[in-house]
Length: 212
Image (tube, rainbow, N blue to C red):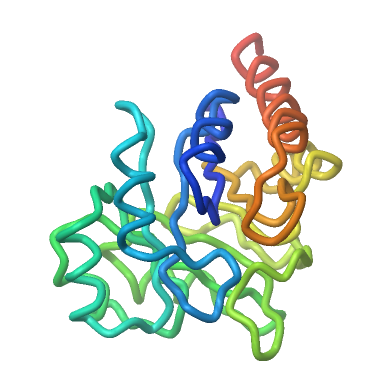
């Protein structure tokens, strides 16, 4: 099965086009004011309107007020919600949209239990735990912490870039990979050459998987 790619932290239509042109399966829009990749509802709506069919638009929230989440999904054409904070299962289900749950992984994280605690999640997104930060650290976590018996698709994030994504895919065999800072020229500004290089590495492995 081919590895899918989500490019997160898209802040403008141009970067969305570049990501999609190079084969991204999904783009991520961050609705978290503390993030340098935060977008307003107006910015997000413009980006989402520009996305062609068969590319998913994911809205990322961190411990957000339910009324704010509802306002976003009323005004922005989202396909999926990513909950990236301390949300529980009940916090993720009222919005009539599928969701994925992010987990910041550290040595004592029980990912099998996480999967059980979020039965309605379409996948778990595994990111790097850094004290005081909720993501976007650019740091890789120990992939050996991921057990083989998780009953959910795995989206691998945390410090990925063109130079290590092949090893990441071969080691973890995730359903998808998620990248943000690894394809940027500055925080919130994507770099077309870095996106192209990253996507080439993923595609090279995907072609190999098909041939095998």
